[in-house]
Image (cartoon, rainbow, N blue to C red; front, top):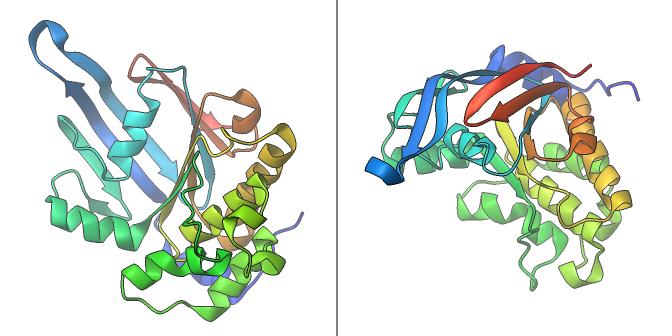
Length: 243
């Protein structure tokens, strides 16, 4: 499908740096002495802006730790993490909280929708908690791209798993984050719903100008991405465009 050209997409594209996020010499260790674990070792990584990047690796490879460091959820032992041109690795907790609110979106394996709220209320909840008004045009564009316009009044128990994950994706996109992190987003879905959600993640990049980083162990899921990073034993084994 050809990308949809809109002022919103154009502005989003020109406002973003060439690299949405990067790490240099990123190392993360846990524990001390004989119990010390090297989760990440001297990781140099670039996440191109406006791309769908998949981070692949087996369990225990360090891929989730990498995501947590990129998202400001974990503090590096050494090295730097830069997001949207800002080095976040030295920020204090309160600074990171504000930075995540303004620049980072999340989609998890669990949908994490509040059962008493409608789809629209769930989507807008992060903005309400931050005291921000929604951008009506952007919300309409996200809802249209994700195909959930007919579900906005429905509560989670009235939607399929795939529909709930699309609502969760809209919630992650509504604040127009610099980076959207998707942590095993299809882990609770069947093959049809998984393909649907992965397709919408790709569309959010191509039609909304979003930058997406997805952590997965599934090569079929990674095939939807533009850029692939392979993590092995806490190190970057390879990174580059998906063939």
